[in-house]
Image (cartoon, rainbow, N blue to C red):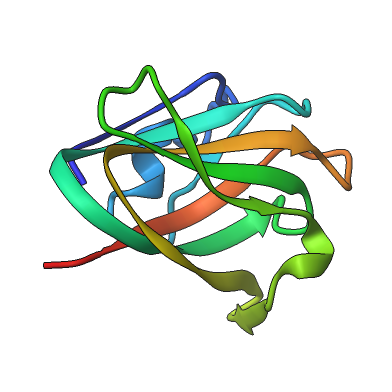
Length: 135
């Protein structure tokens, strides 16, 4: 992935919670949103690809309601998958909640995770994300 942007992120003096932390390859860092429902994080792939799914390594927010959207131009978005917490298969690695979400391939250059409703008081928080694409 080339870059990450978000509608919000937690301003933390000790830890970097900026969007780029979700794609830096380091599970010691994370993106954390403000503590509200309607937030999003967008990832730029650099070139158009067939997107098959997404791996998410959560701290908080895995049980929330959110959409995963794909776009070729970052203006027109197609919902690849809608989730509420009860729909996901979650497994744990060292206390982190992990899920792999597979969906019908969608061609795009941008991936958006759009938070809809939280099931807890914290914001969304992702240690790491990996987009699954055709080569």
